[in-house]
Length: 204
Image: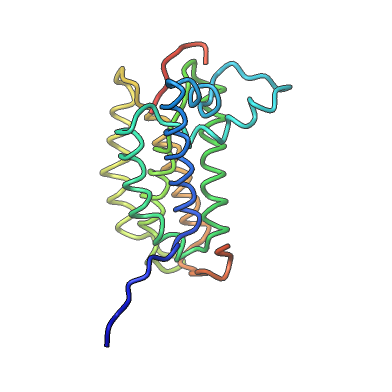
Protein backbone atom coordinates (compact mmCIF):
# COMPACT_ATOMS: atom_id res chain seq x y z
CA UNK A 1 0.00 0.00 0.00
CA UNK A 2 1.47 3.30 -1.09
CA UNK A 3 1.35 6.18 1.41
CA UNK A 4 0.77 9.64 -0.01
CA UNK A 5 2.32 12.42 2.04
CA UNK A 6 0.18 15.53 1.73
CA UNK A 7 1.25 18.85 3.32
CA UNK A 8 -1.39 20.13 5.76
CA UNK A 9 -1.96 23.54 7.30
CA UNK A 10 -1.72 21.89 10.70
CA UNK A 11 -1.28 25.00 12.87
CA UNK A 12 -3.18 27.87 11.23
CA UNK A 13 -2.34 30.56 13.79
CA UNK A 14 1.37 29.75 13.95
CA UNK A 15 1.75 29.28 10.20
CA UNK A 16 -0.17 32.46 9.36
CA UNK A 17 1.89 34.38 11.91
CA UNK A 18 5.11 33.12 10.31
CA UNK A 19 3.92 33.82 6.75
CA UNK A 20 2.91 37.39 7.66
CA UNK A 21 6.28 38.04 9.30
CA UNK A 22 8.19 36.73 6.27
CA UNK A 23 5.93 38.79 3.96
CA UNK A 24 6.54 41.94 6.01
CA UNK A 25 10.29 41.34 5.84
CA UNK A 26 10.20 40.71 2.08
CA UNK A 27 8.27 43.96 1.49
CA UNK A 28 10.60 45.82 3.86
CA UNK A 29 13.69 44.59 1.97
CA UNK A 30 12.08 45.54 -1.35
CA UNK A 31 11.53 49.11 -0.14
CA UNK A 32 14.99 49.49 1.32
CA UNK A 33 14.18 48.88 4.97
CA UNK A 34 11.69 51.75 5.28
CA UNK A 35 8.49 49.76 5.88
CA UNK A 36 9.14 47.75 9.05
CA UNK A 37 10.48 50.63 11.21
CA UNK A 38 7.49 52.79 10.28
CA UNK A 39 4.61 50.31 10.44
CA UNK A 40 5.97 47.35 12.42
CA UNK A 41 7.86 48.81 15.38
CA UNK A 42 6.58 50.20 18.69
CA UNK A 43 8.03 53.66 19.36
CA UNK A 44 8.05 55.83 22.49
CA UNK A 45 6.50 58.82 20.72
CA UNK A 46 2.87 57.72 20.93
CA UNK A 47 0.03 59.74 19.40
CA UNK A 48 -3.29 58.78 20.97
CA UNK A 49 -5.14 60.27 17.99
CA UNK A 50 -3.25 58.20 15.42
CA UNK A 51 -4.62 54.76 14.44
CA UNK A 52 -1.08 53.89 13.31
CA UNK A 53 0.29 54.36 16.84
CA UNK A 54 -2.30 51.93 18.20
CA UNK A 55 -1.58 49.47 15.38
CA UNK A 56 2.15 49.53 16.16
CA UNK A 57 1.51 48.42 19.75
CA UNK A 58 0.74 44.95 18.34
CA UNK A 59 2.26 44.95 14.84
CA UNK A 60 5.82 45.22 16.16
CA UNK A 61 5.94 41.41 16.51
CA UNK A 62 5.83 41.13 12.70
CA UNK A 63 8.78 43.44 12.06
CA UNK A 64 12.40 42.23 12.13
CA UNK A 65 15.64 44.07 11.47
CA UNK A 66 17.14 41.36 9.25
CA UNK A 67 16.69 37.78 8.07
CA UNK A 68 18.87 36.36 10.85
CA UNK A 69 16.65 38.02 13.44
CA UNK A 70 13.53 36.68 11.73
CA UNK A 71 14.81 33.12 11.33
CA UNK A 72 16.07 32.97 14.93
CA UNK A 73 12.63 33.87 16.27
CA UNK A 74 10.47 31.78 13.96
CA UNK A 75 12.60 28.66 14.10
CA UNK A 76 11.53 28.51 17.76
CA UNK A 77 7.94 29.60 17.12
CA UNK A 78 7.46 27.00 14.37
CA UNK A 79 8.93 24.34 16.66
CA UNK A 80 6.94 25.08 19.84
CA UNK A 81 3.87 26.86 18.48
CA UNK A 82 2.10 23.90 16.81
CA UNK A 83 2.31 21.90 20.04
CA UNK A 84 0.72 24.77 21.96
CA UNK A 85 -1.93 25.30 19.30
CA UNK A 86 -2.84 21.62 19.42
CA UNK A 87 -2.93 21.73 23.21
CA UNK A 88 -4.85 24.95 23.84
CA UNK A 89 -6.63 25.59 20.54
CA UNK A 90 -6.13 28.16 17.81
CA UNK A 91 -8.30 30.91 19.31
CA UNK A 92 -6.67 30.67 22.72
CA UNK A 93 -3.15 30.75 21.29
CA UNK A 94 -4.06 33.73 19.10
CA UNK A 95 -5.36 35.53 22.20
CA UNK A 96 -2.11 34.74 24.06
CA UNK A 97 -0.01 36.10 21.19
CA UNK A 98 -2.14 39.26 21.02
CA UNK A 99 -1.96 39.91 24.78
CA UNK A 100 1.81 39.36 24.86
CA UNK A 101 2.35 41.64 21.85
CA UNK A 102 0.14 44.35 23.33
CA UNK A 103 1.74 44.15 26.78
CA UNK A 104 5.29 44.41 25.45
CA UNK A 105 4.32 47.20 23.04
CA UNK A 106 2.54 49.29 25.67
CA UNK A 107 5.20 48.94 28.37
CA UNK A 108 8.04 49.62 25.93
CA UNK A 109 6.26 52.78 24.80
CA UNK A 110 5.70 53.91 28.38
CA UNK A 111 9.08 53.17 29.95
CA UNK A 112 11.76 53.04 27.23
CA UNK A 113 13.12 55.58 24.76
CA UNK A 114 13.99 53.14 21.97
CA UNK A 115 11.88 51.25 19.48
CA UNK A 116 10.77 47.65 19.83
CA UNK A 117 10.70 45.27 16.89
CA UNK A 118 10.49 41.49 16.64
CA UNK A 119 8.70 38.42 17.98
CA UNK A 120 11.22 37.46 20.67
CA UNK A 121 8.69 38.25 23.41
CA UNK A 122 6.34 35.73 21.77
CA UNK A 123 9.20 33.21 21.65
CA UNK A 124 9.80 33.47 25.38
CA UNK A 125 6.08 33.30 26.09
CA UNK A 126 5.90 30.03 24.14
CA UNK A 127 9.05 28.60 25.75
CA UNK A 128 7.66 29.11 29.25
CA UNK A 129 4.11 28.08 28.29
CA UNK A 130 5.50 24.91 26.70
CA UNK A 131 6.84 23.84 30.08
CA UNK A 132 3.23 23.63 31.34
CA UNK A 133 1.92 21.34 28.60
CA UNK A 134 1.98 18.10 30.61
CA UNK A 135 1.31 19.34 34.13
CA UNK A 136 -1.83 18.66 36.15
CA UNK A 137 -3.91 21.38 37.85
CA UNK A 138 -2.52 22.30 41.25
CA UNK A 139 1.03 21.27 40.35
CA UNK A 140 4.09 23.37 39.56
CA UNK A 141 6.01 21.50 36.85
CA UNK A 142 9.73 21.03 37.37
CA UNK A 143 10.22 21.87 33.69
CA UNK A 144 8.82 25.34 34.40
CA UNK A 145 11.27 25.86 37.27
CA UNK A 146 14.19 24.79 35.07
CA UNK A 147 13.07 27.04 32.21
CA UNK A 148 12.89 30.00 34.57
CA UNK A 149 16.33 29.17 35.96
CA UNK A 150 17.95 28.75 32.55
CA UNK A 151 16.26 31.37 30.40
CA UNK A 152 14.71 34.11 32.50
CA UNK A 153 17.52 34.47 35.05
CA UNK A 154 19.89 34.78 32.10
CA UNK A 155 17.74 37.58 30.73
CA UNK A 156 17.77 39.37 34.10
CA UNK A 157 21.57 39.35 34.20
CA UNK A 158 21.77 40.44 30.55
CA UNK A 159 19.28 43.27 31.02
CA UNK A 160 22.07 45.57 32.20
CA UNK A 161 24.22 45.02 29.11
CA UNK A 162 24.30 47.66 26.39
CA UNK A 163 23.11 45.90 23.26
CA UNK A 164 20.23 46.09 20.78
CA UNK A 165 18.33 43.20 22.36
CA UNK A 166 15.17 43.93 24.34
CA UNK A 167 15.72 41.75 27.38
CA UNK A 168 12.69 43.49 28.84
CA UNK A 169 10.49 42.00 26.09
CA UNK A 170 11.97 38.57 26.77
CA UNK A 171 11.22 38.85 30.48
CA UNK A 172 7.71 40.15 29.90
CA UNK A 173 7.05 37.41 27.38
CA UNK A 174 8.18 34.86 29.96
CA UNK A 175 5.88 36.41 32.57
CA UNK A 176 2.98 36.23 30.12
CA UNK A 177 3.77 32.57 29.45
CA UNK A 178 3.81 31.92 33.20
CA UNK A 179 0.43 33.61 33.66
CA UNK A 180 -1.09 31.71 30.73
CA UNK A 181 0.32 28.43 32.01
CA UNK A 182 -1.26 28.80 35.44
CA UNK A 183 -4.46 30.21 33.90
CA UNK A 184 -5.01 27.28 31.54
CA UNK A 185 -3.71 24.71 34.03
CA UNK A 186 -3.40 21.22 32.62
CA UNK A 187 -6.57 21.52 30.58
CA UNK A 188 -6.36 20.43 26.97
CA UNK A 189 -8.92 21.94 24.60
CA UNK A 190 -7.28 21.14 21.29
CA UNK A 191 -8.78 22.05 17.97
CA UNK A 192 -12.29 22.53 19.29
CA UNK A 193 -11.66 26.22 19.88
CA UNK A 194 -11.10 26.95 16.24
CA UNK A 195 -8.86 26.11 13.37
CA UNK A 196 -10.22 28.30 11.43
CA UNK A 197 10.86 56.09 18.23
CA UNK A 198 12.92 59.03 19.65
CA UNK A 199 16.00 57.02 18.60
CA UNK A 200 16.55 55.32 15.29
CA UNK A 201 17.71 52.00 16.66
CA UNK A 202 15.26 49.30 17.65
CA UNK A 203 15.62 46.42 20.04
CA UNK A 204 15.28 42.84 18.85
